[in-house]
Image (tube, rainbow, N blue to C red):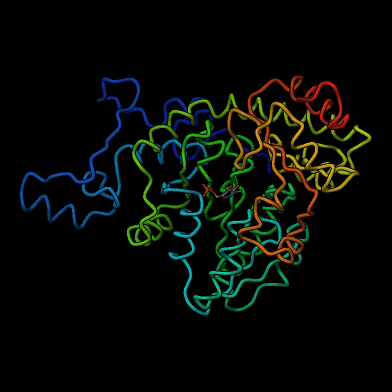
Length: 405
Ligand SMILES: Cc1ncc(COP(=O)(O)O)c(C=O)c1O
């Protein structure tokens, strides 16, 4: 199913670009930019009003762990962008995932997840979930039947990440959600890599979507935040757990994220174009063994990517013929991308995921996740693609190249 441009959240069927600018507009408000509500607690005029606040779900003017007006605005705009009824913003992407798992799972439950996912998610599912009596089966996301085979009578949740970080593998979202729905199992998709500009999993039957807002949603590498989106009913369940987990977004981070979000469509369009050009350049370079990018016709799931994505995103990964040593030489030689984690910001970042995730995953676990030691992850920023390609060309010419600093 092609991705719609319009959000269910607003009856007016405005395009994503318009929603990013207007979805939280308040006709009563005189300031054009939103204020920041920094207060932790708010007062009630009477004892009766105070009692009523305690009975209300998600009161924005009560106590910050329960809600905050600046946070609510961020939630409204991301919900509009994803076509969700409701959203819950958190202090990080991992906070969003942890809150969701705490809300939905109990001892004895079973989860199906993918071998290829963000390292923090893998570590949470592999090392922490079993300590609470939750069993997790990991499957090859490119094989829809593997999801079906992994289900047990106790399966409560299927966790997806498509495209996955850092291998850019895809899950057939329509197929997996159809099999989950038929069995009453919830699906939860990490949409961080794609962004709502490129993909809207709720339109394809997913029950809950999350983002590391830290990445492209905020877009400027100055916010740590997360968000989960879905139906009013599911987000209400998550909110109850959230008041206890306490992964609370700061109002300033919510405000900064909202500010960054206004330009998501401009940035995502630019990053799609840039990543495509960089991927094509690398795919044609003799020193490069493989390039993982769903926008390349040679990507094994390129047809699926064209069906379920509007654009192919700003993240790619690749391996050099020279393996890990050559990868480290290239990473050190490049002048523009910063040797840093994270993605979706203004400056390109470049890492060896096997090194970045060595705190969270053992060598065996990395191998199981399909992450080779020599894999380089390249998250494009907002630089011009021609400059990045010149830089890569110089770096790939070798560390002794006179053009390399
Ligand atoms: C795909 C993906 N999901 C989740 C996260 C976790 O987000 P955060 O770092 O905001 O906790 C990350 C972080 O890199 C990520 O890349």
